[in-house]
Amino acid sequence: QVQPVESGGGLVQPGGSLRLSCATTESTSSFNYMSWYRQAPGKKREWVASVTNSRSTAYGDSVKGRFTISRDDARNTMFLQMNSLKPEDTAVYYCAVFTGGQLNWGQGTQVTVSS
Image (cartoon, rainbow, N blue to C red; front, top):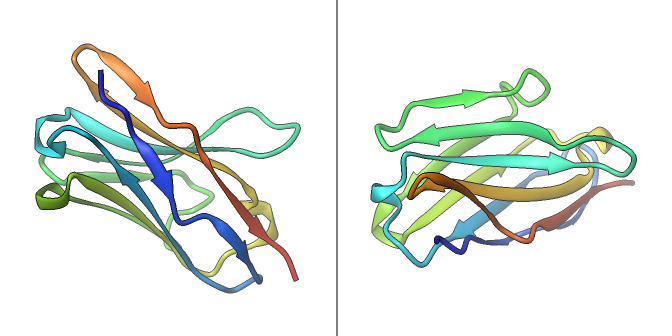
């Protein structure tokens, strides 16, 4: 199993930016794909973005144009650059890695967007 570890969450004002990281103990080049999900209080977990081994990317409608997902295989790390943050972006953000025939989840990092 892969053990993703998220970091970079925190408190930011509306319109601000944050950069989340997802570090892994295995080479990210071996992963079929990696994704970011988020879950706000009282809401179901929402898919945010994904990046494949071939660097193809996809985004949810709510973040497209504002968030950018990337991966640095030399550092075994995936990133989520979040710009133009809105209060509705407030959530726990989770890294998910698909490899070895299963989806592996991190423990999450809190992002709070508030004035």
